Length: 115
Image (tube, rainbow, N blue to C red):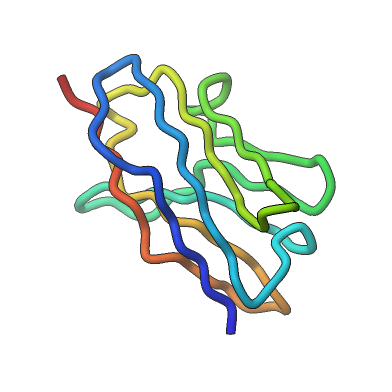
């Protein structure tokens, strides 16, 4: 059973930073496509960043240059470093993994950017 658990969300002022982490159990993240999505109230869930096995990464245009996705293979975690946060980054952030042709999601962690 694959489980993904996010942590690291919270309230931060504009221009601040947060680091989200997704801990996986039941699978080895380094072997699969993984990513971070976010969903603001009343809006659809959108891709923030993804990582295909190896070094290939992909970012939404709105976060390029500010967010960095990375894997810690020793800890079996997926991290998202978010710098220079803006109010429009406010959303619930979800960890995602494509394992054996199935989609898996975490429960999400709330990020609020406000002064």
